[in-house]
Image 1 (tube, rainbow, N blue to C red):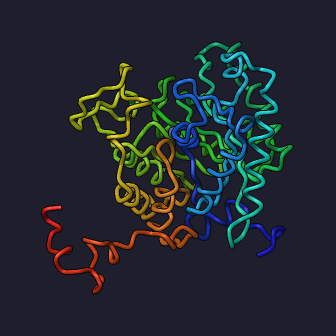
Image 2 (image 1 turned 180 degrees about the vertical axis):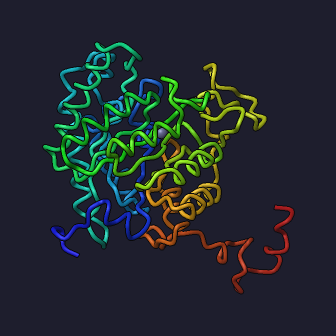
Length: 355
Ligand SMILES: [Zn+2]
């Protein structure tokens, strides 16, 4: 397939699963290119090759969408760190890196490059001034995304319904396909008291091409809502959980306690964001989520915070796709002790229970 024959997002979703890797914030932090807590994506300017490598790794693992890493790269956050003058260069650099990767796929049709806006953290209910400011922040970022050749726009991690509606309105003005996903907190309702389901219904009414949930929740506490959303909506639905074992008592990762007997607790009040590792889902849990969501009829799939290439491959393979990284999927057959390969000596195999 040639570059100009690239299928659009909706065509792809109509014919099967589409994989989108999110979770850049946590993974770039783990790779040593971002400060945790502060979470500003300076990486596109300061270590562009590190960001390019992560995009390539996700692409190799099967991500069909290359989402520009502009999460938190908005005017307000840049003001918080006193670097507002770098706002536009940061956005353009992130978009250009994503475009480079999207247009040089590994052995198949080009990926889709996505511009990205998200929760502003200054949205305030019934405060027109803050709301207008947020709308302007969205407009400038979406403008740069269009300039740099985005194929689609993703608005994500919204916990105010009205903020999500505003993001969608701004994205729709461009005419590009829009993905809009919400991330309600532990009270299981949007902060402006709209239910999760009603928010998604409204987003569909307002013209969202793909509507769903991302971030904050692990598979266990996201799937019940995805079921309701899938049943109620006609448009394509998205599900991109975090990769941690959230529970009914703690539906999001913000207050997730360490129940793994850890004796060296985080220096912060919460395990979020620097001590979540023991609550990480295994690849099989993530695969199970993807299969379950896909069987419900959810075709836009991925994972958010906690994502790594291994888990993206697991999502892709769980819904029947073969991706470049499938070449290196597990092969226990040849393990030196647990494998069944004939060359493995009996005295080594027999020791397995004591290993
Ligand atoms: Zn996330």
